[in-house]
Image (cartoon, rainbow, N blue to C red; front, top):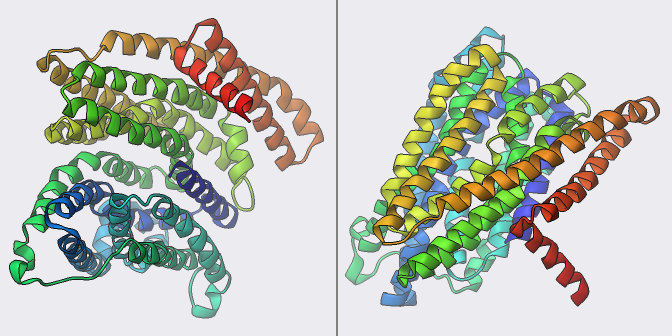
Length: 525
């Protein structure tokens, strides 16, 4: 699953590289980002996290209590009802595209053609929502059946197909009376279709049989299993909504900042999502079953220790990742994106946004770990409270910082929100531990955070000053790609070595665990 996520993230970066090279941080790219954000927001809210969290336990329970035939009937009904509902939402979105775009990108009307282009691409990409919702349903059932790689790899196929089809359509767009970037919008539809299609043979292979009506469950909407899943989705949707709503709010503010702001923030957030997706989500996935087992068995101290250890591992990985992105933002972005229409000023602006986002990277990953814990301890309201707090605080910080710091203030406000949200979640969960007669070890967690923050900052400043020293010599003698590649390579090698050295001096246990893991793997080979 981690390998599949890694491949998907790599292809996602390639997709962004293609955009940067073909369109830069232009008005067309801004229009595309806003147009894609509407169906993508709906996907994240209704189709993936919340729906999967509700469907997997429902399917497993029905399978255990009622048998295979009844379980496949529930799956069939979910697929059909889900696809029908989201298709209606998508049609409404297409009909109301002018109002939707005007609601949070009305500033685009001041630039000739930009608003109209955004509306057209919103209509083009709306069918992506039902397609990817169906793909998410397939993925949930396959995960419940113990199949993980192909469902996770399906998102990688989305990126690959959207690149190939999008670039091809962009090349021939003039023949169809379209702007080149509209071809990329059609690539999104093709990618969503393949993301669902690639999972279908595996679903059939695990025994899926379409079954709609049975005598004992003639009324579809009276089906108790379907109703149970829908009720579970409501708190799940609110609990998982904060990040996407905050991104949407940032986009609304960014449209008024100026041309390119939406694109700079999007490119920066994409880079920040890389370590969150690979490390934060993986640690969250690994923590949940261990924690849930201990909690269910009443071993609350053991559950507390497993949660503490996971948070320490988040610090050990994500704090150096955040300082690396902050201090090496220019060469990283220059290597990945500065080609074609994406110029040096775009690189600098994106690097500033990335540095502001990086402040909250570790907090984002901690939230990824803590939100599922709320469901494991039976406190879904905590996730809802956290989500509501996150949206309100992000809006407040946007209003505070956007006038003085521009688009950088939006990224900075998002990071502060993530920090406060992680602290709120930890406090609420620690109170639950206290009620169960144990402690959440808050002091130990804060001590670990300070230790890893010191190590990460020492590494970051060292890498930054080395980069300042080598940059003039490389700029004078080498081509852009070679220069940026060497700067990233020197920074990466120097950063890893210095981080491990500083960790050894301060006896940072979790970092030493990683060293020991690689050493044992190498000796084994």
